Picture (cartoon, rainbow, N blue to C red):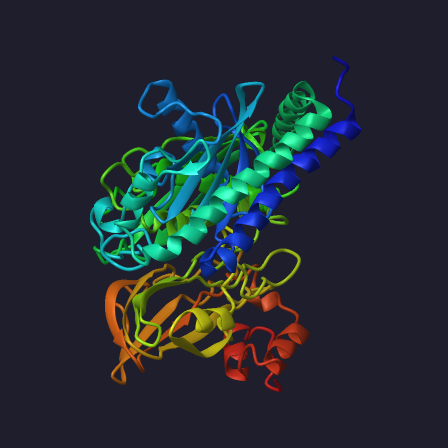
Length: 566
């Protein structure tokens, strides 16, 4: 066969990416739940038939699933090979959400489907969607004080949910019998399956046009080039060891912080990440399974080197030593509901804090680093049905060498956005009384951090139970190179006119609410970058004029350069 030419390689790279992007769009447009349909808390990708390694992933999918889905796909392949899972047939779709089988938390449900060519599996398609509820002790699955994974919800090993294209009624009945608002899940299940079927059709069109051998050759070459580009990017970093720390507020059970210790060793064109000395496995749900820990490192490096094409090749120069004996390598039955949305972002923050020392012109101060997980479950008497509402929220990004941080950006781990207020008020018995930038929350620096989000939601009717698994309530996002930390997360619940602040600040579960009660949240601001005394006085004056800081705040935070005339 003739050597693959550069133009054809570029076309196939874009075509594979487009397959994943179209799966993402199909999934969101067909889903019923606002967290998927509006917030885009989902991802789709193409994976190797041999070992499940990543071939391509949608640009509009959550980056944290980059590493995770390749590990869960690999697990499915291995379990089929050793007989622990039924062998596939064309049209089969496996469902799996077990965190210890290459996953995240239980609410992230993965579908895995083989794509056949000439009677053999050519590759696997996989996607993940965040289901609003998966059972467990509290609506939404975010049990802040769970001490075992069984308290967090239904745990599924790889089983065939669709057999030869037909939904298995028995497996579906088992799922529905263990989750809340079960009647609403069929829409998300059908959407998740439809995304894979669209991907299969589009991939077959590419294979029909270019041939199996050409596409296989292109996949191998794209992986080789991604590894080469990542190695070239790493090579410019000075050799040495770069150390950092990041902290989780608490595990939700023991009200003490958890520590992430990180040493990044750069040697030649490779990086080694060592989390030795991090806190031991914790009692509460802030443990991270290995797949999520690995993926958190990968996505952090993806933030630093976004120009490197995404595939398994990009991960080859990144060596992560298994953090055995720490809360970053959770084993059954440790609870893990906070791993994907919160601990993953602390891991990424540790990577940023280490790498900003090595690449100060390229790496930012810490972003907000919390998904703001707020789950509300109850009964709407006006509609005569139960509901589970899941609110995610953005925060400030860290400043960097060139400019201030982005305000109200999405979480570090994804592209998920807060669902529109109008959609939430239409779907659930709530009223958003306030929704705005959290002024003053950006950390001071030569380039300040971006601002978080401030919102307040009121229960309009019926009774409900609220749960929070957030972070950065005890410590704000880290500043860099002399910059100050961003404002920490804040949660206040107003019941019967009295204010309640969770003892763990960012975590609590099963708070009983009724009509008229309110929840107020302020998400973190990003860390500042560089000495605040070096900030341009004109920029400070403009921030005050726009109401981002009061004159008093500006004089306190930037007093080295703020004139009394502000």
